[in-house]
Image 1 (tube, helix red, strand yellow):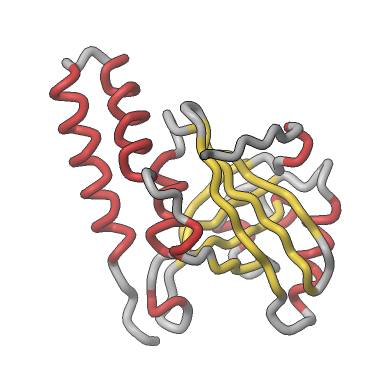
Image 2 (cartoon, rainbow, N blue to C red; image 1 turned 60 degrees about the vertical axis):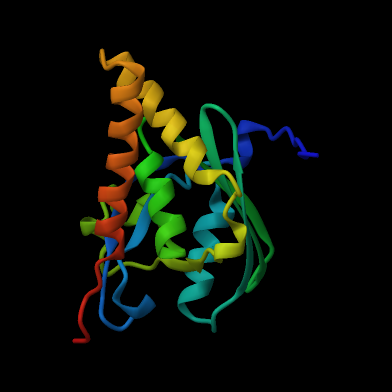
Length: 184
């Protein structure tokens, strides 16, 4: 039985932009997605990032949720301070980003006050969060393919063409997420 939880939109921190960072010394050289988030109405997230710069790694639990339109990643930090928030990904336009987090098993959270683009805040504080494989939703792949198939159908592809193209799209993007940087 699936548990449904209704969350107020105010719980979600808006994603302003995204990108990825890959270094030989982090996550075995995997590219890790970066979410640049708007903390204007979420000062607790900005404070959390500042606290992480001067403290040891904290404790966080991550939970994925998904519906027909969105994938949700919920964060529950207990150290260095208690902060709960989520981010949501439109499956029509951000499925690759959400899947990148699943594939790389992590995500950086960078407040937009340090720059609205990843490159602008490259040397600024950000939090690296491990997103354990056990958090992945069991039918994740099928749901992503279904959402991407729908998008491709809206661009005039037949059902069969769209489904094959969606599968191919995720296969190719996962090849990119699997690339590793050498040690520096």
